[in-house]
Image (cartoon, rainbow, N blue to C red; front, side, top):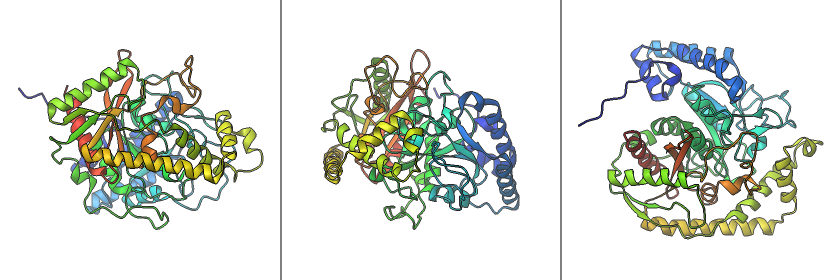
Length: 467
């Protein structure tokens, strides 16, 4: 017996990017109406959530009217022409300040340059409604900063949305825009996606060009945050277009990601590792993810229990992270240390003690983990894990209050290893706990297998939503 089809939403703030474009094409909705609805949602909801650090209604409506004219004339510019989008306040945006959550970066500018992310979005005709909050220089896995204060989780505003792309995830989860773009240097797209119950994708390093170069170097990725895997694939098709300012960017793909997500994945070999060999997840989180994996196995994935075989690479990650932070902050103006987030100040001070040899030793560890994963993927197409071993905790704290943890990587051990290896990793909703908090399932693939990870994610999304 077939399940009844879920009715499509008619409220623009509940619609996906794909649904908005379909409505524009059918003439049942205009980009102006969609943008007005998103702006109204921001006005109504963001006082409690604090997902946006900049909103420009006048400029957004100009973009929306231009898009409306293109739809009416039949000369649409791109894949998501007229779809409202937000951008994390780490990416440069022309004529808007990029303050990176820091009191040490003033708004005065000038701000003459778009990052590759902002440039591709504009070229596609999307409507940039504003910029989303970030912890200072995107340094941690929650979202609060001396500049913008505390960002909260729309599912439960007493809790954190995660980070560092927490503003982007909260905006999408709260209906304040269907899609956003964040950064991920240790889990910063996947963590808030899991905590807020949405989709977050970290593609292979270099798939989304970045400029200026991130001080976090090989750890740094850009990535979409969306409500569906299909929206993530379409947005990635836009964001992955070439830009000459990133010498590490990958060559253009020969196919489209949106064209690959419907491919057949039944029979794909998947390893399920609930602990990576060293993590102790919350029992309820593990039970929810195990249940999701069992459903995927029943639906056709070939699932085996297997750990990847590497030891926790936390020390190497900490060295690379601290070195990058110290390098960036060294260029900040006098007084920046005193004005910085206290946790960031500790990371800065640690980074200043590191040598080039320390950094290269950490890179060697990262390379060995990547080699181990390369061998692992010769046997298994994908790896499945929880995204985060806990659910969202009280907002305004770097670690769960009352825990024995001291730093944010303590509670996100599933994410940062795959920044060290530069592999694609996707978080999709796996279910909710008894108290209603979202839990994420992480899908990891070999380098350059972004299309496979998205296709498995789309399959998993369909299976899990039908339960």
